[in-house]
Every structure is written in C-alpha cells, then in structure tokens.
Amino acid sequence: MFCYLLYITDGESSIYRTQMSKQERENRSRLKRYISYKEFIRGTLSIRERVCGKPNCKCQRGEKHVSLFLTRSKGGRIEQLYIPREKEQLVRRLVKNYRDVRDLLEKISSINWEKLKSKPFSDAFSGMQRDSISSANSSLR
Ligand SMILES: [Zn+2]
Image (cartoon, rainbow, N blue to C red; front, side, top):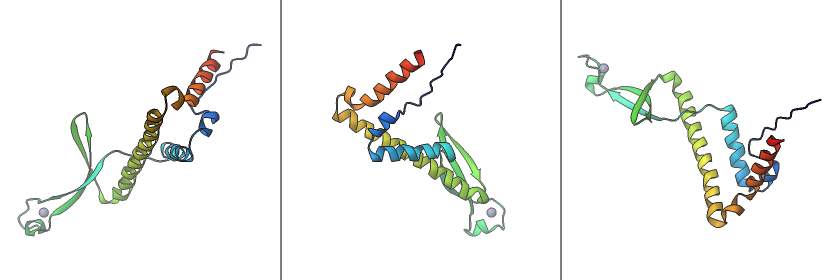
C-alpha cells in the first residue's frame, strides 16, 4: 500500500519557538491574531472643509461644510475616498489595526536586526535554519 504524507510547515517549529524571547513570541502571537481575525486598511483620515457656493448657505458665513476622507498613496498617486459619518468609527478602527500590524512587523524586524548585528549569521538564525532543513527533508521523503 502506498501512503503519501504531505508535510506542511509554516516555518515555525516548536523547537525554534522555544528559542525566542517572551517578547518575540508575544509580538508574533499578536500579529497572528490581527492577520486571522481582524480587518485593517492602510490610509490616513483627514477632515476637509469646503464652501459650497450657494449664496445664502451657512458656509458663506464661515461655518464650512466638513467631510471626512480616507487617503492613501498608491503607485505614486493619491487615492481618496469619502467616508460617511456613520462609517467613521469603523474606518478609524481599521486604520488603527493596520498601524498595529505595521508596528508589530517592525518590532519583529528590529529584533532580527539586533540578532544579525550581535551574532554571526549562522548563529543568529540557527534554529530557523534547522527547521528549514528538516522541513525540506520531510517534503523530499
Ligand atoms: Zn454651503
């Protein structure tokens, strides 16, 4: 009987994980929660004030119309989206979630920078290399 075993790894063996600092594990766990269960969006919220042009409107007396926009740069251009008032809280949360994800990635990256600076490359990521080697062998079997 032929049995085919598919070995799937996410590059995070339990051996490697125990070599991580508590801080590192927490950062990764938090990041995982964001990726798995939360929505996020990259952009900046900004308030725009405008005058509409109707002759007797309150905006002509200084009480300008206020609108909220979400903007992002994409491919060298600025994209903007009008956000209705009832969507404001939701969008604010999504924007904050994106920043949290970005901050967590930056923290993890910084730890890796320190590892690379403080040790020879082979020592800094030795656990991960073992993991990569063992999972590569597993997939060959
Ligand atoms: Zn007006």
